[in-house]
Image (cartoon, rainbow, N blue to C red):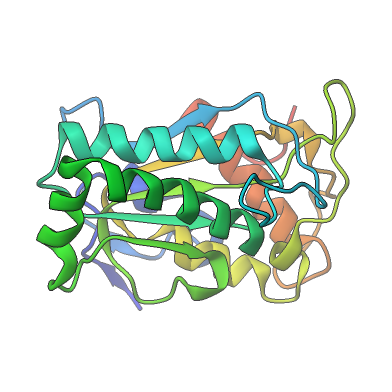
Length: 230
């Protein structure tokens, strides 16, 4: 892999190019004049509870972030129905809950049903998936909900980030961060400083997936590539 063609805005590939490819990818320098495009950060004042339940009886680990994610999806559908959308979450229980919330809108709002049906038979159909199931998917807009956060206000999050903590967590994140052609919106209840890692952690080492997640949240906040959290 030496040439990257997907991203219409350079910021969509810059992070992975530096983090995973030693800046060796050949990319077309592009900076869209549309302020909506590129990597965007959406801060949510949410809390993460592994045992939380929704009114439907399914698990709802971070209700504030689930609701914000669906709000953002609906806003994009209303404003830009010409753009394809994929939604990825870092937790399977939260994925189910977001699907439930979206399904309510699908059943009751004609514009949402019209959008989903429009893309249904195409290669870029609308999807809501958990991290492990996002592979070769490519969409105009990718919305990423990190799900994890503090158990309550003022308390540091536990350092258990599901599949991110596995040996291949960083690879899954790299795939996820490079799926969008026009825009990534990172929806998160985390601050970079909430994630505890050593900056000396090497690729594939224990904690490297957490480091990548922390660095990407920082990238979303600042729009600049960096090393380490100050």
